[in-house]
Amino acid sequence: MYICICNAVTERQVHAAVDAGATTLSDLQFELGVASCCGCCAETAQEYLPGGRCSSVCSMQSVSVELTAPAAVVDTHPAANSFPIALVAAA
Image (cartoon, rainbow, N blue to C red; front, side, top):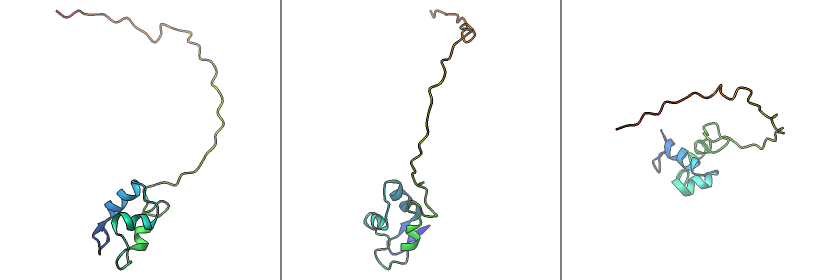
């Protein structure tokens, strides 16, 4: 689908620019020329930026989780996870 008719910019191109790091309408204008002619596509293009309703980029949030060291694992059956392997010599 075309986002910007004036500059023939597609939805795929806008997604690629956002995936490459574009975060503002100014970034899209510089990279693709979106909303640099008539401006009718500015609102639509902004929806593809991070946080927009068409964005494929999730917003990042810092999450703190306290971790505890696991208890020591003791293998009570050392042979339970092993089996003999026959070796065959090729001629």
